[in-house]
Length: 96
Length: 486
Image (tube, rainbow over all chains, first blue to last red; front, side, top):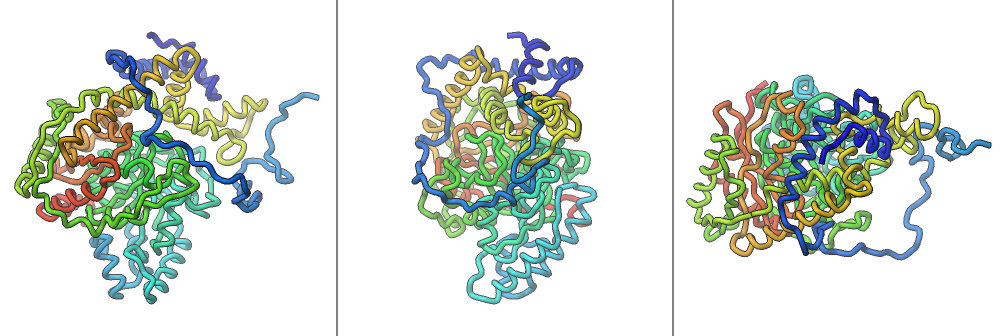
């Protein structure tokens, strides 16, 4: 594979990270080196190997659907960049 | 008292040789002075620290004291601690004051331990040199021109320089063991699932595991007892019977079968490191252990698989940093999307962005099978290699790192060179196995060499006992960096 500047810009857009042309250009060479390293995997035959997502073969625990936490909205919102009346403020999303 | 181990400090506190306030004050003073040179800590909060010490002194005057009551411990700044600034080494969380305690912080509090401060780290634990921290790089106490390793570099440097008797770290691909090796201390990554990840800022959730860092294997055992506990708030936390790690360290090494993986002993490793490890293995043979040749044939691909899996998980985990609920928000933006993009462009450093881009790319349409699924299959084979190897040995040993501490800036321009410094540590994370690093020598530049031990699942006790027995017959773990005398 050959990673292009366009690939870098597309990934940055998907990841919601603003990137200039120059930054994408500068990022390209180190990224190509990383992908050369990653490509080493392709030499190994992994046919019929079960993918491993997790270190322990366990299934997710379930719990009863009951409230276990107390309301601490003010405490939790204290770290937010912008709040008003208990709401997180973001730029206008829908035009009227 | 600054030279003592956790075990010795605990005994001295219980004998009332000094109070926790006196001890804590002494460590605060030393740490604050040395921090100008080492930069091991991001945050001190004397008021909270000394309040905990006072409380500990009260407990010490009752029958309720534990082995950790009154002991100051430095926590990696990846752990949320209530009312403490918790930055994860990032501009994104520069002013984030945690509203809650991580599970392990809560446990240490229950044991009466004192939070000495929050230690510096690579940004979001992504790095092997501490050069990616927004708060400046940590310096290696053995040579201030060299890196301490990463990502738990501040925690390693703090213990090495005598700024803290012990610390906590986290290990996703070697982030406890590699800095422990480079700073000449002992560090342990438990079996995945033993230590709760609740309140640990997530990097790669299927690999991340917290663990202790200290001056000796015995101290690691004491700290681990506080850190291991089932936690319903971590969906991968495992319910296991309690193990008395510190009570089991006096095992005979007679008959211990030590697996020597041929893939981890090559000429790629620095000659001094090879020599240090070879001599350590001879010590084990003297104690009655036998060396068994083993093979981990897929392990040479562990770095490749890791740099798909870890960035993939990171790109998902770090999507939460969007400038809405907590952390940094860009000062100027045009609309919601622009706010996200500018916030993340300004809030994240270069290495974090690189890993988010890698992760986003390998998970994107058309590439999932070739990269992510392939890496998960390689992971399975790596895990099976270990299962096979443990049929003929009780513990695996190797160098922790291919070289001793490298110069600041030496590997900063080539990410792959940096990534390869974790070449011996990553496989244990992919398999979920417990592993540790202990000092086993000094190279020609008087820099520490690390011996890695990898145990079987939930067999921390065996691994710690082996490390402790080695420390009973050698004194590498007692060597102090030149800075120590300052």
